[in-house]
Image 1: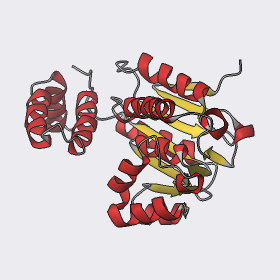
Image 2: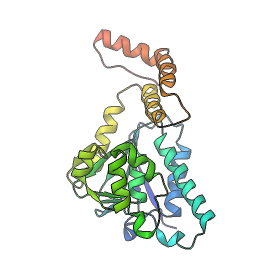
Image 3: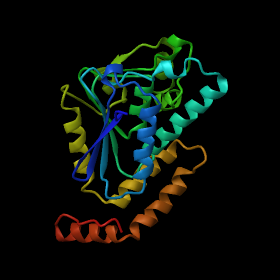
Image 4: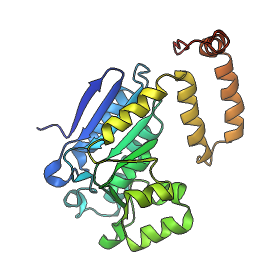
Length: 258
């Protein structure tokens, strides 16, 4: 069986490439299985300082889900499929190091949802985003109805969800869906540069900052309470002592994730 998600390591960073160019990198069971395997295995591997997710070829990041795999499903099977996808995307969203989507083309349906589960999105000039599920008589299944609101607000999210219209990279930047628009072909290099910059910061602080931002959207968590506890946790770490000493001594800190 061919690999659906190729994995390349560059120093402390990993590049995950959805490798189904013949299907515009559509998400199928194998893609989900391989994404799940990586993020489950590496969930507590703190030597990893960043992960980039991109698509093979130049046409698509991920052009959607593989409709052929579930078009015959009933309600229960559909709900289970959706929940599994959401669970995997939560693992990405809650990963301890930054996960950056390098969006090189179409990011539609499940592809847009995968990009939104990442912490940061870099779009090439040819990128297009959309949630076209209503065209098929469906609703989003992998968190699109929830995360799109976080980035666009209720009215703009509803318009995209209800019309199934796509937006281009510049519109996505203007609306806050992506943080960078770069020349097509340089998405991964830009993502690596962002990860390299973040990797110079305190790793415990990075991990807890990701958790704190996620807590804002978690109805079961008091984000402010989580913040003062995490502030205490980081302040009591060896990394915080090293950071303060480095600041006073006017040198770069050497963090050890302790």
